Length: 260
Image 1 (cartoon, rainbow, N blue to C red):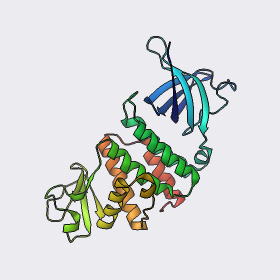
Image 2 (cartoon, rainbow, N blue to C red; image 1 turned 45 degrees about the vertical axis):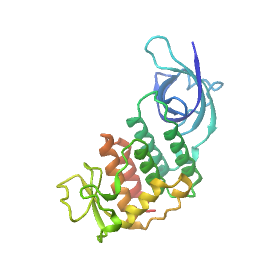
Image 3 (cartoon, rainbow, N blue to C red; image 1 turned 30 degrees about the vertical axis):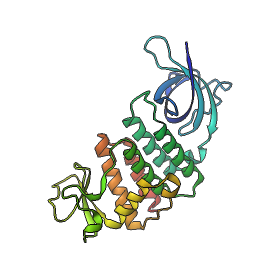
Image 4 (tube, rainbow, N blue to C red; image 1 turned 90 degrees about the vertical axis):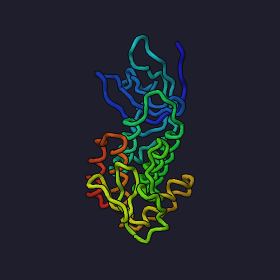
C-alpha cells in the first residue's frame, strides 16, 4: 500500500473515541484531506502532541482499505504556531481563514497556491509585525482571486466606466453582480455594500502586488472598516456559505477593539 509524504497545515482536529484524532489538513501536494491519527492522544513517540491547530507539519499517510479515512502514519513539526493559538484574536482570524479553505476547496485537489497563501499569512500572524486585520484582507482578496471570484473593483459592472473616470468618491458594491456600481447606473435593491474610492484602490493594489509588497498598504480606520465589511460580506456570499467562525471573529474583534 503506497504512502504519501508532504507538508501540511492543520485546519481542523477533533477527538474520535478515547485515543484517536480526526484531522483535516491542507497539504502542499495533495490539497485538503481528512485523515485519522490512531492512538494520537496516547502515543508520544509517533506524534508527541504536535497535531495542533494551524501548525505546519511534515506528514506521511496512506489510504486505508475500503472506504475508510486515510491513516496518518508519521508527523514532524515544521512550524509551530503556538503564538497564534495563545492569542484569542489571532486564533479567531486563523480559524476563519482555515474554515474558508475547508468549505470551498475540493478534497484531494492539489492547490499549492492556496497552501502557500495560508502558510504566508499564518507566518506573518505569528510574527506579529502586521495587524491581523490587514492579513485577513490580504488572505480574502487573494483567496477569492485564485478561485476566479475576485470582485470587479476597477470599473462599474454596468456601464464599464473606470473608477478614475468617475467623479464620485463612494460606490455601491452589488454582491450579485460581483462588482461596483456607479451613481449613474441603477443600484441593487439589496445585496450591496458601500465603499469609498480610496478603499477600492487599496484593495486593487493588495490583489495585484506580490505578497510582500501587498502588506505595505496602510488603511485609515474608516477604510479598514469599509474593506472588512465588504470582504466579509462578499466572500461568504460567493462561496455560498457563512463560516461559523466568522461570528466568533466578529465577537472577539469587538471585545478586543481591533480596528487596525
